[in-house]
Image 1: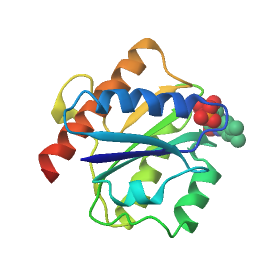
Image 2: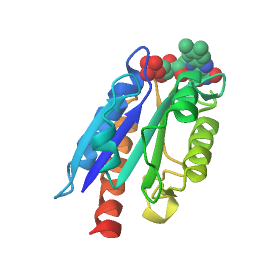
Image 3: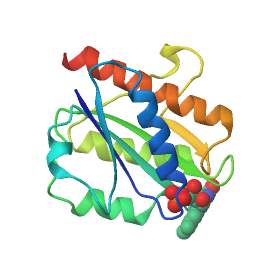
Image 4: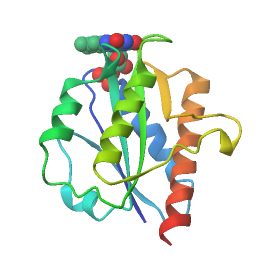
Length: 161
Ligand SMILES: Cc1cc2nc3c(=O)[nH]c(=O)nc-3n(C[C@H](O)[C@H](O)[C@H](O)COP(=O)(O)O)c2cc1C
């Protein structure tokens, strides 16, 4: 099973969270994971992945324009039928990361993906729409990000085995 974690990051926070989510995914057996920036991504690995996890910094309460441009313009990625999940970073609670998560979820749905967050159904810690970290995350936010990664990987194996 392959999982691609694709993110935009200017100052490194979203990249750091991507790496934490990757570590969480790797707790699940039979899973291969790559983190990739939108500036340096591997279409072959992504297209052979069962799951794509997408991450963005929050810009003006939404996804970054760079990620929006990537999602609108990139034609090399085949999203259809894959499992999708999302995460975002922001500077402060209430900075709009939840809205950024919902924007990414909309893009994934439009592209024909199956969207999953584990949700409240998975119990504590809850991740309603996806993972949010303040900058690169406090210790507890990092722990949530790793648990999120593990849950997405578990669902990947369950769905695509
Ligand atoms: C143009 C711009 C707009 C931003 N807008 C917001 C915002 O609306 N809310 C917020 O909490 N943080 C905002 N931030 C802060 C970033 O979301 C935050 O620092 C993020 O973790 C940066 O991610 P990166 O280090 O991966 O680039 C903004 C940053 C920039 C550069």
